[in-house]
Image (tube, rainbow, N blue to C red; front, side, top):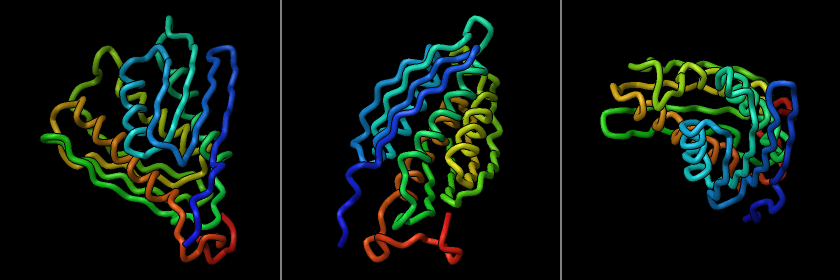
Length: 200
C-alpha cells in the first residue's frame, strides 16, 4: 500500500477587466468549503462538488454581476480547472471516474478521464431556464472552462428529471463523486502514469 499524497494543493489567481478570482484547492481534503462568488446558486452547486468529492475549496470571486453572471461563471470554471491541473500529479491516479447520482425524480451520470486532452460532452435538458435568478445555460460555460484548463475529458448526462434544481444538483454531486474516484491513488501502480503512452 502507498500513502495518499499529502501535498495535492494549489492556489491560482485570475484577474481580468471582468473578474478577479482566487481559488485554493486541497484534493485530499474533507469537503471543507468557503465560497463567495456573488452568485448564490453557483455557490450551492460548488458546495456539492467539495462535499461529495472530499475536496477542500476556498473561492473568492468578484465579477461584473451588474451585467450578468456569465463572466464570473466562465472565469471561475477556468480558474478552478487551472487549480486542479496544478495540484494533481497524474502518477498513480486511477485516471477514470464515474458516478450516477439520483435526487428524487432526477438522475445524472458523469464520467471523467484525466486524459490530458480537453473534451466535453454535455447533455442536460433543463426543464426551466433559471433557478433563483441563475441562468442554468451558464453551467455549460463553467464546465467548458474547467475541462479546457484541467485537461480532462468529461461526459455529463442528465438521464431524467423535471425539477431543474434537482437536475443541476445531481450533475454537480455526480461531478464531485467522479472527480474523487478519478483522482484516487491506485496502490498497485502508485508511481506509474496510467497510460500506454507513458504521459498524460
